[in-house]
Image 1 (cartoon, helix red, strand yellow):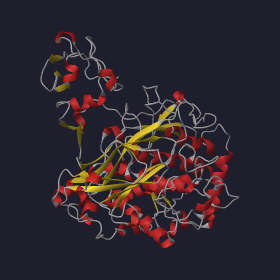
Image 2 (tube, helix red, strand yellow):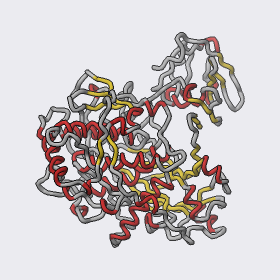
Image 3 (tube, helix red, strand yellow):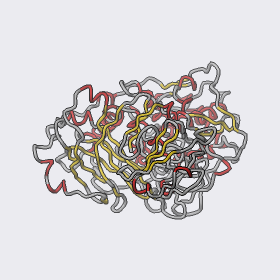
Image 4 (spheres, one colour):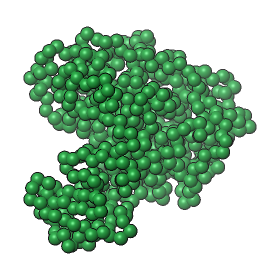
Length: 616
């Protein structure tokens, strides 16, 4: 419960038979009850506000009964209503004016439970229990070490790295530093093993994917994993750091050779045999699909495709924190609000490309399924490269900064350190890697200059984006085949200043599917060639990618999320800035009957600085 005042202030209620319903106010805050609910409001003298629950749901608000404790309001209604009218009004509030903080709190390990797989016995990802939690403190005067590219390390480093992992695997099974225990951390945090503090249902769990928690969680995860490994071989290499798999550089686009040696502790038997060196990684790879997969691509074309993916996801398509990090995930929210650009791709495709193909007795393990991904030692090098992209993205210019929302900064996780202490950490302490004691080796970043050349086919001829066949697309729809639809733009002919202040964003809403399926579809703008060709094409806006989760809680669990694509630069490249609408094409890369979509729209993402802009 969150207390708004030390003592309950009186709440005045005025009935209103107009469109806005009833108004409720106290102090400087105003709540408006929609007309549909206004008739259920009792006399003003019956109401006082003493507590507001951040766990309230909209269903809880359907009936407002006479009481001395108004009790349960939907948290979003609450925040939107503060200082502004509800329903149809935009409220602009400073961080300081928001009295209801709702960061995701560190999970209670005693509440951890098994996760049920799609088939077979339940999986216990829970760590050893400890009630003694210490808060993280930065090391005093830390020596800043360098994480190196895996394809550039020498034989001495490889020998020491193998020994560190061998020693970690040899620790007692119940030691929280043991390799399996470390792998289980990812399983527990991504497969719903932890209820959000204050909740016990399966709809309110701690989830570190598909939201703004993705980057900070994995940075902390690698931090403690690395410290444990370093402590185990301090006698061999006092400056040990984990390597990063440099898959965004042509020289590092294969699995590093020392991960592929059969007798190595870094080897994993559950990898795709077709993805072994010298095969180049596919940063736009399909999930388990059968539709329009081009298997004749040359190595040169694969490198170009990979570089174009990187340019789209980090340069042109993620100009704001919301696009890069993902959507907000606060206490009381249901999981999967929406992933950021990098989490979607290249992060997801590398997971699926590395793990076993689905089918038979394979569920994509290890890397291709999130519950098992961290069982493969290459997981940590993969995520080290993902972590490396965070500071690179911030260096690319205006608006590319860390999120300043207190609910993000104060979100928490717990990890065991090299001394077996259970440590509580906050997102705000993860923002500067030098304070954590590491930086990344300086290597070439060739994708910074991999912008697709403008395509004469990218502009839809005048009038063609008004074809009846496209206008007839009805939502919701099942994404069983290629879909094309016209989407109206809120504004055309924007000035340079307007483009710098607001990114034009394509939003695909209500993407729904079963959690244990691998899902991928590509998105194109104004493409006359029915959406084929992949990232090499100028019209390519990006992809939606879901790496499977294996569990289900007694029934097949459905995910409902959305995905956003920054398209300001893309529209310029296509010469479509003056068009009133765009033609959007979705190309599925999965088997039929798996995905439904509720709608597609275009909106603007404004860099609001220290302001929270809340729109219902």
